Image 1 (cartoon, rainbow, N blue to C red):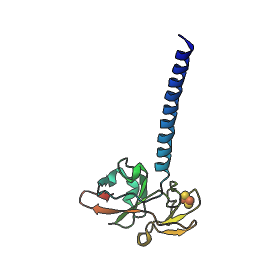
Image 2 (tube, rainbow, N blue to C red; image 1 turned 30 degrees about the horizontal axis):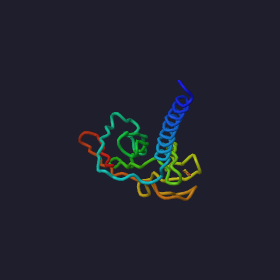
Image 3 (spheres, rainbow, N blue to C red; image 1 turned 120 degrees about the vertical axis):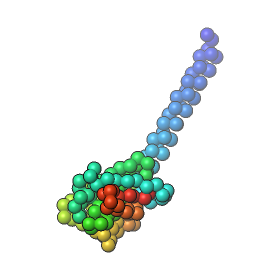
Image 4 (cartoon, rainbow, N blue to C red; image 1 turned 90 degrees about the horizontal axis):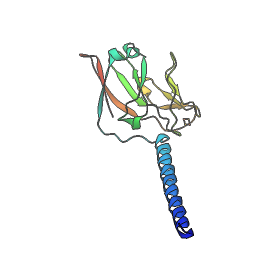
Length: 158
Ligand code: FES
């Protein structure tokens, strides 16, 4: 092996390593960007059924549950709230300010709060998803939710 072969090999290896590093940086950036998005998701019409018997907190008015469905809302969580005997509402848990995941509601409080800068959003039926205090930002995205009392399921349309 002469010196020319050694140089060529080193250059080839260097380009190979550089390519792998560039691909890794690009995929990391794309993942991070998609994780931190605070934009509403595009509605696709996909329907997801949730059984009340699998979610006991939804059996009482005012109860809620956080759910994540990999195929909708960019795989990020939503909050389902029972707002009356016959109605349920669903909203994203992704803050419209900078994309942080919002905390679950605490007992007897009709709002949720983003841990990052304190944006507050209503979970009351008439005001569901509205920015009501703390950091001023856009309202949360909500998803059509219908209740089927016959089989005690709700259908959420994303
Ligand atoms: S990211 Fe939620 S208030 Fe800033």
